[in-house]
Length: 98
Image (cartoon, rainbow, N blue to C red):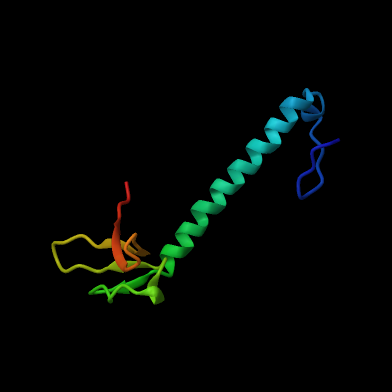
């Protein structure tokens, strides 16, 4: 079975690979796509984060939302996410970016 791209190009080198290597190559490609899409979706989520000068009261309405807290001069902005904790109440948690 030839490997096809969206432009329907065949790769002769792929054709000569053992089946187990072909399967691995396809799985690796799928993993790389998922990783790229995950990073892209995270960046899109960040683009739509709330941009606030004070965090609103955490509630079910904000559950899962990101908030970029715009701090004043001399202080770095901080990123937060609203989560439901084990006590079934909502809180803003710091998101650490490294």
